[in-house]
Image (cartoon, rainbow over all chains, first blue to last red; front, side):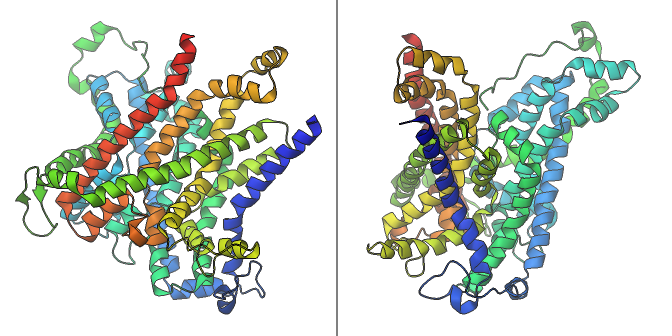
Length: 274
Length: 314
């Protein structure tokens, strides 16, 4: 095979896989704009015979989708903010500060890294229920506001920053806190942003915890709300997929905006959204 | 997460000052780690101990707890439904991971060779990984739907019989696997691409000069050098694959559909603990899952690592 033919084969393979990958996403968007009859027809069509942008408002009317989206932003945003803040502080202390018990405190959390989340699910639920946290924001957010893996990754990143940078700042009269906020944090933006984006996407998609903790529209997230939507209107594919599209768009936008860090972060650490 | 052991730091202060300082002079340090550790202790560590205690109880979550001893665990060992769930989970893992790794390798090789619009492709492969799982599970349900699905429409178009994807035990497994493959191919391709780019072109060049053809170069040089990255991918997919929950839950429901073909371990756990409110048994299942996950990770680690060790010994 000539080099040119090989190149064409590679390009074709890449293109084919891309096409197959995009089909479900494109289909979701197209069906979302079909008429009721068309989306439920026995002979499914790909391209809408007629476009129905009013499906957008109809989806919002059928279920409290706006409320669900707001709840998801609060849930995913709250956990992400708290988690990155606590992780950055703890990681800095573990990377740079000397204090008694540092080694074994770090060891405790490394050991618990191996325990799957399901084990703690029932006790977390019982604990939150006892504290009166069912269907409240503290109950939704706090149990997910820490990350063992995040502390580990940020610590590794902080260790990679030369000590001289801080020493120079300290010599110029900066205290520890200033050295941390003015020197270390700006340097760690890619690492922190990667962690934050992963957390946000992960929590946006989190189904299990909101399914257990929220039991009203006050805290119900989109992940749970979509199912609810499917139950009440199981056969109305167009509105269902419109809601699904609306749920997916924010994540794709965030990914587009941060993809440089994101892809870098994956190659660097293999950190996943699971 | 290959570098799990903490790195050794250069001592920041001399031992003399360290021992002579009273504990409260470290207060700022303790304050810095305290938010993380308070949350971690309450919602991370305490639940682990509580889960061990709970597994020894009979409890519906409302009434008083009753001591059950090892009853939950002896029942777990003879619970055919749990064993079936383990087998389902393993089968779905194999059906999704093997094609996923092969496809991801192909894509990574393509991206690694000279090809235009690399950024566009990378973005396209990555998009499934950031989409809402619930939303896409609903779409896959429609794509694989027996009557209205596009897959069956394609099969009919080329003269084949439609398949009851979501009403047949194997169809359910195929659909769930297809969705996992779709979601993770791009993610793994990016990891493999990073691994491929770390291989120096001279090594490949040397193999070619020694007379190796493209296939030999790939199997004898590229693949062995890619082994650590492959190990990482297989391990991550093993951990993730043991925790599959959303896909079957949306596609076929909590009981796993026809003949419970889509009932994974976590789905069974969810059904017992939160649908039937059997918290004691739920906790026992959770510990069962832990053991399966640890064993499985260990076996995977051994299998993927062995050829590397043989290669090093030669």
